[in-house]
Image (cartoon, rainbow, N blue to C red; front, side, top):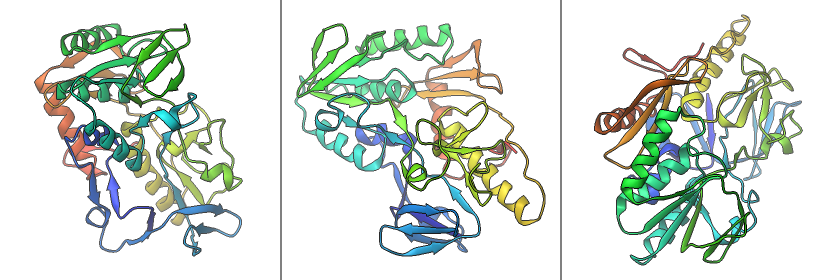
Length: 341
């Protein structure tokens, strides 16, 4: 088995907002996480040649494969809002989070930080920054705060942000990000010393550039066993792949078990057996609200929020932290299984 990654470290994507706030390193040597038999190549693929089963790398090397697991994750789109690339930071990748961390450290105590995005990443980022107590924080979202949550969970989020001093602006689209300002679609212009875009996630363009079948966002199209509809030798997992029917939500909760299922699919193909379809086993949304609070929204296996099944507070924060730690160990931990096979 060969693992190809552009960094020698594994980046804990779910902790990049913590890294920005200097609350967690968010990286761990990848070699420590891989089995001894795995070969690690620190390089990045430029194209996937599915016909000849080869990867063409930035170094100029060519790597042959029998089966390829396509798990390149996602990133924040710099073209999602005019001015993102020039005047904003993101927490969608390691390099971007490093820039965000540096920019945050350089702010004065009276600075205003605007977080754009009312999804889980935006919520966690705003809460983490507010807990620092060193800057004023606002959150702007084009829709409702936490749209995937129940009304009860959203009410608890609003209450938490109110107590934490976070100014939440809902149902307000951002038209443009300027130097020191955020312009809303209704004509309102907000002062912003640092603008953090925590929305508009999309896969890298590798699959599209390689001529593989992708959706409108550039995600590799796969069947219900995670096999690419372009090539039976390519298996997709995580944010970079999309099921042709009933796509999975971009999340750590889906990425980890889909990675396990991708391995199961390859093992079954190698044994000459038909691969099994993914069986969704969602549990809920775990949302950190700083280091001492969190919110859990429990869901059905199909990812629908349960109306009254919400937990918040220090116990939820403890549970959220344990889940974040367990994700580094993958697969199965005692009675906890990440398998959706």
